Every structure is written in structure tokens, then in C-alpha cells.
Image (cartoon, rainbow, N blue to C red):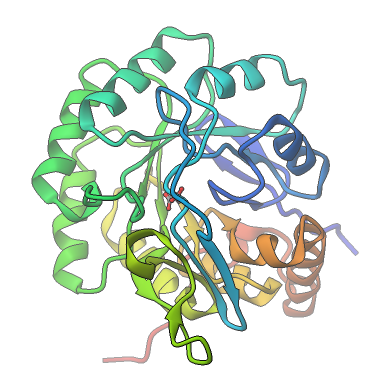
Length: 313
Ligand code: SIN
């Protein structure tokens, strides 16, 4: 029997396995990032880096539930220079995706200028969708601001760049955002960030479960899989085919990965499942995907990518 090939390509990077960590999951420190690279993950995403280190929001700021999680981390990270240095000094054949953001547009531009001027030539992900910065909206929900930042970035940035998007819920939102994204030489989009701003209630304590923003935060895990599937599908139907898609949201099994790829994802990121199960989730889910593909007679991801069927009109 021919071996099953799980490899996938985004930009110039080949991932031997299609599962990597979502930004913010096991990726703030060198110890965590090395552990991801040593696991069965196909690559690494760094914590979204800001120009200067940030402590993030007050604790408690992450809470697990049976169906997922809520977080309001507030971008705790070691600062862009730390992640550039980690990448420059890490010997790995796995792709490393450098996630970058900022609490102001000017900071995001400055961060990308530093990356442009650095030796780093890998994938970079501009996070336009953190729901947890107190007093700051998600750029990805503001069409004008999205266009402005992409205009400013692509005036100087020539390396492979993706954007991490918030979840959209209305078909008109997909039309409007895809029309904007199609105007730029984006390497990929990542759909979706957590669903913000949700609320989890502890009925016994009659209280919210996280401290920042009065308990509101980004929802991840099983709750959000249908939203992630819809976003991947809707953008695959609307974006230029050269713009690849990282599918993120609600994956706990190999079947979930299969569904996201069926909707058009090139690779898939794991978030809450890795927070809850640890890095062994990568090997388990890779194996489940492999078994499912074998049972269906598929040998590579392209055999079913974007092949989701609809009922006839
Ligand atoms: C956070 O640090 O608050 C999470 C990052 C994100 O959702 O983009």
C-alpha cells in the first residue's frame, strides 16, 4: 500500500504534517516553542509578538470548559526581538510562522518594518483579530482599517505574509473582506481567531470565570468548529486561488481536520485541544487523519481539499 502523504505547502514552506499550533498556544517562551518543534507538529507558530514585551491581562485569564475554553490573555509575549532571535538560533527543518501584532496600527507597521529589515524570510502572520486588548477593537472587523493597514504594509513588505482574521458571520461580510484581501499579494489567511467576545458563567459562584474585561473573552474549542468551517469554506470560494488558507477553530479529532481541509484549508492549527491535552494531541490527530484517509482511499491532502459537496440547486 502506498504511504499516505500529509505534506502541504504555504508560500515557500513545506509542512510535512498539516497540523501546527495556533498562535498563543505553547509558544511564548523558547522552552515551549522547542517543545512544539520536538512534537509531531508540522511546524510552529510563535506567540503574537508586539514591539516591546507585554505582561498581558490580569489573572485569571484562561478557563477550560467541557466544550472548549475562554481566554483574555491580552497578548503576553517576550517582544519581537526575542522571537526573531529564537528563530535565527533554531536549527529545524520545520517551518516557523512568526506571528506579529500591536495595540496600535503604527506599532504593527514598525514591527513589520523590523521583520522586513531582518534576515528572517519565512512566513509571517499579521494578527488583525485579537479580541482581548482592553479598549481596542479588532482591526479585522473594520474594513477601512484593514485596507489602510494592508496598503501601508505592502508599500514596503516583500516577504511572505498572511493575516489572522476574526470570525465573520454574515455572507456579506465575507464578500466585503474577500474583495479587500484579493487586492494584496497575501500568501495566506488564517481563519479564524477565537470567537470574541463570549462569556462563560460559573452558576455555582454566580460569577464570570476570567477577570479581564468583566469576564468577556475569546471562545475556542468545540463550540466554534462550525464557525471555523464556514469561514474557511466562504473564503475559499471567494479568495484568489493563490491565497492559501490556514484553518483554525474547534479541532479535537482527525475528522475535524478532514472537514476543514474539505472546506479548503491547506493546513490546520490546533488551539484549545493542545491546551487541554498537551502536545501529544498532534500525534493522535495526525494518526486519526491518516486512518481516515486510508479508510477513504485518499493518499494525499489534495485528493479531497476543497471537495466539499453541496446539494443540487
Ligand atoms: C491573547 O493574547 O489575548 C490572544 C491572542 C489572540 O487572540 O490573538
